[in-house]
Image (cartoon, rainbow, N blue to C red; front, side, top):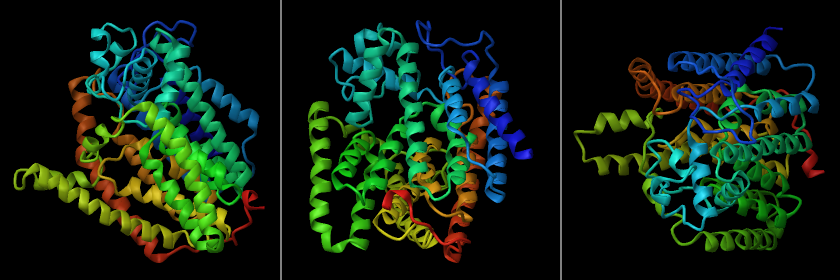
Amino acid sequence: MLRRVLLTASFGILLAIGLMGPSAAKPPLGPRGWAPGELSFAPSSALTSGLLAAAYVLGCAAVALALLRPPARAWTWRGTLTLAVVALLTGPFGSADHTNYAAYGRIAAQGGDPYLVAPEDWASGTDPVTSAVEPPWTETVSVYGPFATVLHLVSSLLGGDSMRQTVWVWQVITVLAWLAVRWVLLRAAADPVRVDVLWTANPVAFGIGVLGAHLDVPAAALALAALVLAARSPVAAGALTGLAVSTKITFGVVGLAVLLAWFQHDRRHLVRRAAAYVGTTLVVVIPLHLWAGPHVFEQLGRARRSVSLATPWRLAVDGLTGRVDPSTVRTLVFAASIVMFVVFATLLWRLTAGQVPDGTAGAAVRWGFVLSTAYAVAAPYSLPWYDQLTWAALPLLAASALDLVLLARLTVLGLAYVPGRVVAMTPDVQQLTLWFRRRVAPYLGLLVWLALTAVGRRGSRPTDEPRQAASSR
C-alpha cells in the first residue's frame, strides 16, 4: 500500500509539472498550434525545484520498496498505455535539450548543416524555431549522430514552423521508444514484474528520460533490441546497432558487447557472424554519415574533455585547478576515467555472473549492461539521462544489491540537475541548486563508486537460478 501511494504521488507530481506552464524546469515553447496545450499556472522556481526533488525522492523510495518486496502482478498494457497518453499531454521538462533537437531538425529541413551552423546563426536569428533555443546552447552545433538528425528532421517536417508542434512530434517518438523497450523486455525477460519495477513503473527513470524527452530513450530502445536479437539474427542486430551508434556515438559499446558474446559462446561461427554483423552495421552507418557530411564528429572532440559538475571527477578538477595547467588537469582526468572504466567494467562483470541465462543472448545483454553502465559511471561528463540503456537492460538481469546502488546513483544525478535549466531561477534557487550539484552530488557520487566497489568485490549471489529467456528459445 505504501509503495502504491509513493508511486502515485511521484508520477502525479512529475505529470503535473509537465502539464503546468513554463517554469525553471520547463522552457516556453510558444503557441501550441495543433499540439497539446498547458495549464495557465506557471510555478515559481522554488516551487518547481521542491516538487521535482520530492518526486524523485518519493519515486526512489517506491522503487526501492518494490525491489525489496516485489509486487504480486505486473502492469497491464492498458495501464502502461494510459501513462503514455498522459505523458503526451505534457511538455518536456528537466532541461531544454528538446529545443536543441527541434532547432537541429529545422536547420536540416531547410537545407542547412546542423553540424556547422549554430541555432542562433540560422536565418539571422529570426527563425521561429531556432531562435527559441536557450543559453548555453544557442552557439552550439549538433553533437548527435546522423540518425538522430534524421529523427529531428522528421519532427521538424511534421511540426512545421511551430516549436511546440515540433517538440510534440519528438515526444511521440520518445514515448513510442519507451513502449518498445517494455515490449522487448517482456518478450525476453524471465520476470515481467521486474520489468515494470525497473522500467515501466520507475518514476525516476521515466521522469528523467521520457518526460524529459531525451534522445537517449530512442537510442536505448535500438541498442536493447540489438542485444536481444544478437543470438537470433546478426543482420537484424547489425542494422539496429548501426542506427543506435548513429544516434549517439556512446552506444557503440553495443557492437563490442555483441562481438564479445559471440567470442564467449559461439567461437566456431564467430567469423561468419561477425562479418554479417559488422557488414550490416556499416551498410547502415556509412550512408547516414555520408548524408550528414564530414563535420559530424568535430563537436565530439571538444565535448569529450568536459567534466560535468555532479560527477566525482569534479572534486579532482576543483582540487587541481590553480595548481596545474587546466588542459593538463583534463588530460589527467580523461586518462584516469579510462582506468576507472576498466575497473568498474571488471567489477560489474564479476557482480553479474549467473544473473543472465547462459548462451549468446544472455551474454550480449550482460556485456551491453556492463560496458554501458561502466561508461556512464566512470565518464567525467555524465548526466542523469545517460543511464537509459542501463535501466533498459537491468530488468533482464537477476535481482541483486546492484539494483539499489544504481537507483541511488540515478536519484542523486536527478536531484543534482533540478530544476534543469540555466535560466528562469531566482538567485537563491540558483545558489542552492549549484551548491548541491557542485558541493554535495560529487561526494554522493563517490559513495556510489565505493558501494559499487564493495558490492562488486563481494560478487553476486542471486537467489534463483537464471531461466531461459524468450529471446534465446
